[in-house]
Length: 141
Image (tube, rainbow, N blue to C red; front, side, top):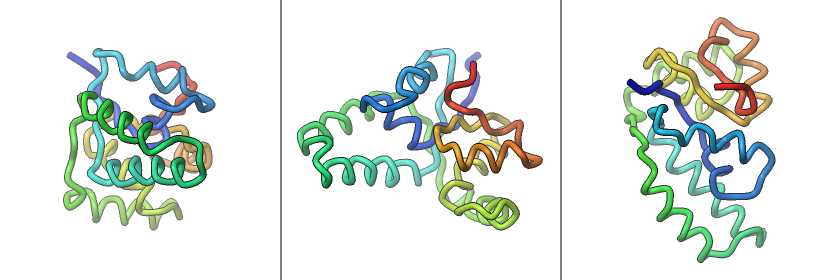
């Protein structure tokens, strides 16, 4: 049986772009992990590519190829509707955005870890009662 991991957009974008932590982010693409995402992931991932195109870091063709490649990654998508209230409650308690806490809410509800490359978010959550539900991208899985 595979281990479930919630993946945020900060990790997934590193699968396709030469950024810091890219090698570490790619480790979760192993079949021993089941990758979970909230619906929000798709909008955030798309927005990152849009920004990269807008500032000239990648071309529109590159973005289209990345989208096509992402579709082949087995991601289990969870509806935001079920995560809305838990994400709001986490955001209120942690003083972090609902966007970030949507990923954490999914990890808490699924009893697994959120893999993130967002250092500020990781630091806040790792100092909270939800420390067991967050995992820094560079740490051993």
